[in-house]
Amino acid sequence: MTQIFRNFTSNPKNDILSGITVSLAMIPEVVAFAFVAQIDPLMALSGAFIVGLIAAIFGGRPGLISGAAGAVAVIFVSMISEGHTKGMLFDQPIENMGFFYLMACVILMGVIQVFAGVFKLGRFVRLIPYPVMLGFVNGLAIVIFWAQVKMFSHKTLQISSEGVKEYVSTFMSGTELYTMIGLVLLTMGIIWALPRITKKIPAALTAILITTLVVVGFNLDVSTVGSYIIEGGGTGLKGELPTPNMELWQYLPLNLDTLKFILPYAFLAASVGLIESLMTMNLVDELTESRGDGNRECIAQGAGNIMSGLFGGTGGCGMIGQTVININAGGRGRLSGVMMAVTLLTFILFTDKLIEQVPIAALVGVMFMMVIETFAWSSFRIIKKIPLSDAVVLITVSAVTVIFDLAIAVFVGVIISALAFAWENAKRIRARKRMRADGTKVYEIWGPLFFGSITAFNEKFDVKNDPEKIEIDFVESRVSDHSALEAIFNLVNKYEAEGKSIKLKHLSKDCKMLLYKASPKFKEVIVEDIDDPRYHLAANPEDFPNPLSEYKL
Image (cartoon, rainbow, N blue to C red; front, top):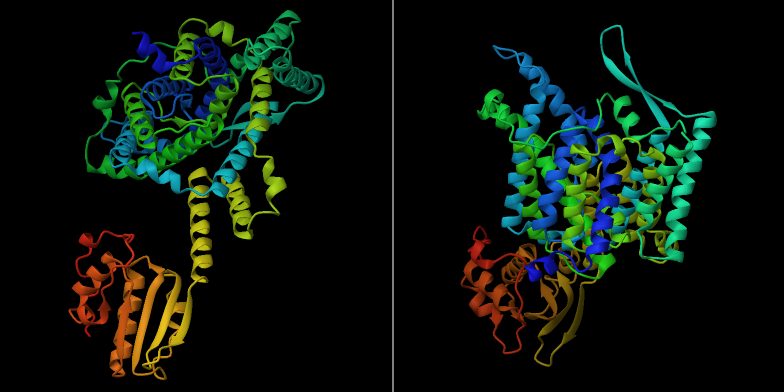
């Protein structure tokens, strides 16, 4: 039992206190995301509890906090609205049918994530370049900052003449605004100063408690968690223990039409959820100088979403803001995530009236300090010192994250990085030419030969004017893909069409095997040598038994 507990935490006090702090910071953000997706805040809080608990216990990264995140919530907005419409078209119209589609979509989202972990797709996050990581962190910090700025406003429900409901935000002014700013600065000041005095108590939790006592003690009229929920259309924080939602199977039509409707949303939500979770895992790896298991995290996130959908919750993923708060508060073990989930459930079941009194300003102050900690300020210092392509990637990913979406930003960043890498390596192909005493012209190839460098490779040869004997030596080159093999094949074909003899030296075993299968002629063209390099092509030769069979020598 002691060993099991040690696997969950190395510092129980820090993990417990940091978990409580994170749960307080989780509430307004999850509620805000619920309003974005136009679902009941308690549905989002239930999802945050279930996903957070399962990911904390079984995930691949101790200290990573998961919950109902906005990046996923945004995806469900149009699906829920369209689902409501589809429900009214049934023979027996069903109101709020979109929520049942949502739960089914979250279950399918989890299944996709579990398969991603089973097939070990989580390891591909290691291929994400560092500039993309910096851009992701900076962009997300800006998004979180802007979300906190919106807390300085009130939402008013307005109904148009056509009966359309719309929430209109009105920015605070006067005494209310100054009080809000003062409380935010008080919270930030405590978080900044307390660690310089003592590190035995968590600064963020202390700041929230002190700011709350100031508001309650002086009876200040400020926005609180309770008023924020009511402004958004909720009835309060009070809820019940999540139970299996049997109405899902009663009302949801289990047919191909339902699958076709929810599958695109489920796939996109699964992708976005895994990208944010795995990127957050990478960030925690950097902060703690340790390494998580991406595939295990995929399976845990998927299992959490499956259970959330079955119990009437919404989808979730790793949350970078709450994770950074947890790490900064000393949370390192799985107990911190478990404590966050259990505390969140406790708030919902038993202490809703107390938590509703917490001023929004205190939580905004905590999030502002998290943004300051998260943003990679070194970006400004290194932007002129790194390659231009990396600088473009960093800025682009940050901008796309803010304007569009995290998943799109990461894909764009990886594509730009890959193209820049291919372009730079394509320029490194070289050919040293020399003549032997017997009249053989030798081409010594230097640099990687792949799809990007084929054009430059072909330009090195003068097929018509070269002598009768040609030798191409790949000793300082690496043949990387099938495009390179095709280029070699075509070059040999051209020389033999001119009636000239050509020999290839220092090709790897994999290259030779593929060329032998393409044409038996290569047994005469390729020179076997004990110094031949040993490496594998990007593709397994067994998967492509005869990739060049369409060509004839």
